Image 1: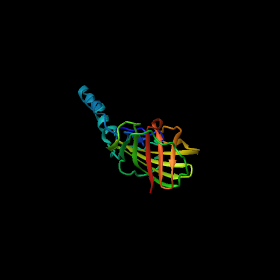
Image 2: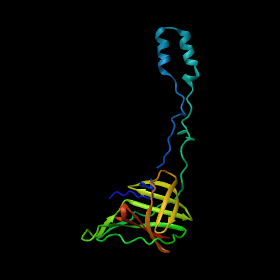
Image 3: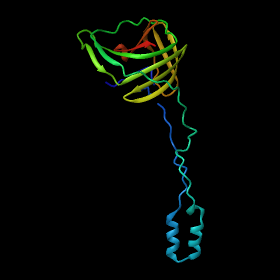
Image 4: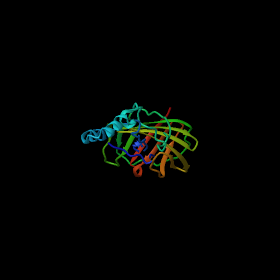
Amino acid sequence: MKLRHGILLLAVSTSFVVAVGCSSGSEGVVTSDAGAGSDASSTGDSSTSAEASTSSDASTTLPDTGPSPDSSAPAACNALGVPAYAPQEAIASAAPAATGGTIADGTWDLVNIISFTGPGGASGPMGTSTMAERYEVSGATWQLGTSVNGNAAHFTQHVVMSGTSLTPTTTCGSGVDGTLPYSATSSTLTIYTFGGHLGLVFNKK
């Protein structure tokens, strides 16, 4: 089951993620022009051949020290690790009404993904997902580390809470912003996505 989390930038999924890479240059090796030397010898012009043999282009080979730094590449938003992939389950009911609440500062790990299938819908465990997320909350600044299908990404968001909804704005990384209902206690945070059909459950570490 592939998931795209609205508060991301994802995926990740997500990326998590989830957004952000470096390009590398191929400079670092100066090589000779072999064609010029062979052309000179075939014409019988010995002076031209001598010039080719003494040319710094033909004789100088610098060691390859790896990709050149790319000053235009973006710096990583954060260095958060991620927890194990979260399990999934289906519940045959509509999602409960969001209650809002205070989201305490600290680390929050994704521990469950709930699919609300409605009355008469499927129910029970659905195995392990391929999605992992961790938030580091400090007031309105949320750092996010995410992995979706093994693709890691990192983001920074400015999150505004109002009533029973939170609205993230991605300030680092390439995210998907929007307003989402949520319910929070001192130890559990549930964010409802996909029109309330999916609940992402986080536990405070």
